[in-house]
Every structure is written in structure tokens, then in C-alpha cells.
Image 1 (cartoon, one colour):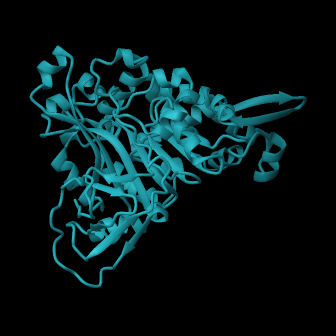
Image 2 (cartoon, rainbow, N blue to C red; image 1 turned 180 degrees about the horizontal axis):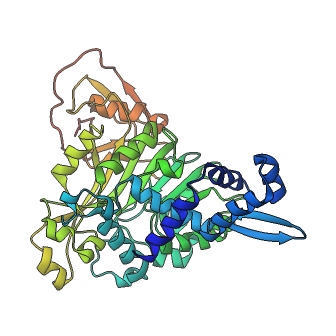
Image 3 (cartoon, helix red, strand yellow; image 1 turned 30 degrees about the vertical axis):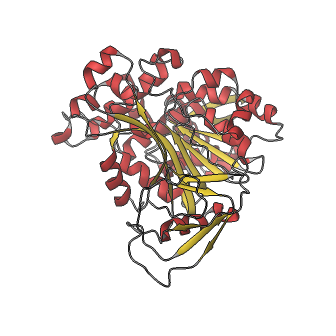
Length: 455
């Protein structure tokens, strides 16, 4: 049995007594004197000493002596490690717990998780260590984001990996969740964008990267001139946000930058995102996609996985997966071809065509799986900062200020039932249906009069 398994056995044994679980619950509120514990449980001193010995030996509790009294507190490091272990169990990531029939499959969740942790936690110390530019060739950020970048600590930027800039406008006062936040580059940019009254939550499973983000948290607060940090950094898995205390309908915007491809359970990721988003909330993420399904033996390759290639989703499977999870209309805001600049990696997977895509989707219940025409017309007022002349909802919806544009019912809902409603006016409703929206997928260029556009 491995050392880690032995330690986990000790923890489970220590928590097998209901009294010890109650003790842990009480200590979660702060350090406590033994006298208070005796008073609470009405047990003898020897019995309490036995319980505390069990909790100390497994590393869950620390003891501090002051005079004749002992004071107890939780060992945060052990609690954090044990919580991560329990999260692995709850999302089925422990290969030892997988059904026997699946134990030899190339796509083993436990192996993928540990491989990715090792790649980003130990093998990579910066973008210079990447074997390809897949995880470091990001689209040009907005002017608003570029203005914030000089305020971000150099170490954070040097150890940041991503294939896009999934930071939308109109974030002031919102709650933003960053999945796979790494060293915190997008977290801290979002921290500035939401303002001191907003909130940003970063989730990552790699402790080495989170340590960098936490190390600079106070520095970033001072850099932004905030009285209190509006950032919370959580160690955990993007497939199981509930175990981190992220409740239903509690987040306005979910972002992610070249991380979801690394997950062995993407369906659970998208279901969790939909759960935590408020009605009208936005999912916007950048990631790597493939033009075909990648063979199983290549998805298991640790280097290909770490370089964001082995786990890339086939675009059509992505569409089907999103629909199955309740996302009926998913848009791309940016699509770029990716070239593999490593001969070694090219020789392994060069037959696959890869693209970097930024995806936008909204949690709206009235979206349809096909764009329908209700004769609705949208007007943009030019009020979104940095988008005074026009605003791109996606790669084929460009709204020029003051110019009418015929839109489908789905687009009308995206403009009127989300935070973008402050910048748009839509004329018409769904009372009259004119059939399927014609001309789907044609990007709009400047024209003398309003045109039409839909997905």
C-alpha cells in the first residue's frame, strides 16, 4: 500500500467516530480550548484526550499548550489535501475505484488527472518549457484588458498558459468564475474588471500554480487600490464545483482559458457550469478543438495531453455534447487555425487539424436548437466600453451602432435577457413565426442599410 493510501486510511479511521466529526466541525470555526470541548460534549478528560490523539496522529488537528490548558485547531494543509482526495472520489477520478472492465482503457480519468498535474505543476516552469505554441498563442486581448496587463505581476504572466482572451465586457459588479485559473492571470484581470464590489473565484487542481496565484494576491489588491481582495482561490476540480461550495445560480460569468480540453469528463464540466450560472449568465471560454475524433492511444499520451492536443474535442462532438447538457445554441467568437511547430509532436498527431476557438453560450431556457425567424430587429446603442462603433456577439453577428439588424429569436433573447440588454433594443416578439431563419452563418460586413445575420 502506498504512503498516501496509508495516510488516507488513518484519516478515515480517525473520522469513524461521530464525536470526532463534531469536533472537526467545531474547530472549522477557529481555535478552541479543551475546556470548551469538554463543556460541549459532556465527556471526561481522558475520553477527550483519546479523541484528540486520534485526530492529531492523522494530522487533522494541531495542539498548542498554554498553561494547564490545551488549545486545538485544524491543520489546513491536511484538510485541503483530504478534501482534494474526496473530490477525486466524488467525480470518479480514482483509477483504483473504476469498474474492473474499464481499468485498462487508455482514457483513465485518474491517470489523466495525475498526468496533467505533473505536466503543469512540475515539468512546466513557464511558457518557454512548452513543446508547441498551442497553449501560448492567444488572440489579441481587448484594449480594456491590455490596459490592465502592466498591473499583473511578472511571475503570473510568465507562468500563464492559454489560447485566447475569454474576458467579455460589462463585468462591473458581477461574480466571475475562472475554471483552471492556474497562476491567476485571467483571475486578476477579471478582478480589476469587476471592480471592488464584484467577485472573482478561481479554481485549479494544481497546487504549484495556485501557490503562485496566492503569493501575489495581496500584491494585486494593492496594485488595484482595493481595500479588500475580491478574489477567492480554490483548490479543486472543475468537474465538481459543488464540493467547493459554489452553489446553484450563484455566478454571472464563467470563463476558462485552454483548460476544458484537459478534463477527462467534459460533460460533467459543462453540466456544472450550467448549474452554477444564474439565469441569463454567460459562459465564455477559449480552447483547442479538433477536426476529427482523436485516437484513444493519443489522448492518453501525457505530452499531447499537456500540450492541449490529446484531449481536444472534435467540433461536432462538442456541439452534440453541449446540446445534451442543455446548451442549445453555442456561438464562436474567434476561430484560428493552429500549426504544430514541433517535429516530434507533428509526427504523432499531425494528421489532425486543430483550431483555437473562443466559445460563447448563455444560460437561457427559451433558446431553440435551430434559428427561427420572428421578424425581430435589433439596435445597438454603442454604449459598451471599447465597442463604441460596433459590437461582435459572435463571428457572424456584428452590430453597428444605430444600424438595424434582423435577428433570429435566439439572438434576440441573448441581447435582451442577459447583461447585454443595457446596450440593445429589440423590436418585435415571438408572436408571429416566419419559419427558419434564412442565411445562417454569414458574417456581416459594413453595409449602407441593415442586413440580416444568424447562426
